[in-house]
Length: 107
Image (cartoon, rainbow, N blue to C red; front, side):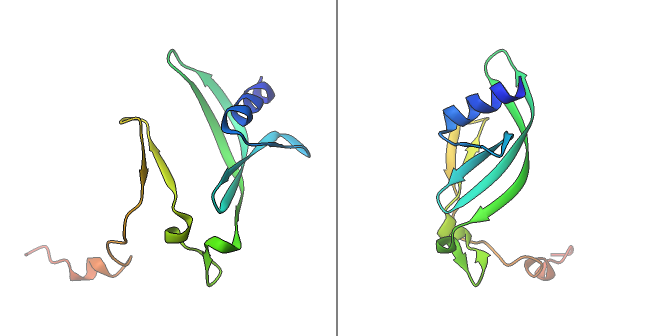
């Protein structure tokens, strides 16, 4: 059943399964790829839920800056099930681990 579900996901997503391992699927995005192993397939009243484990990640050199994935170059697409909309990311808001130093609980 898992292989059939994986083939359905591959067909719907337009992604090939890995011929060397039929229990994995390549999810390709612009500039990156995820290799996903299907863990479970749950049939719900309104849709199917596929649960997977990411077993490999790959990035095209065109989305790298100094050897690190550059979010601005990657331009990820995010899906929100609650609103049934796709979202993009905007500009950075602050640097991690530094913006909190300016916080004072007393105002």
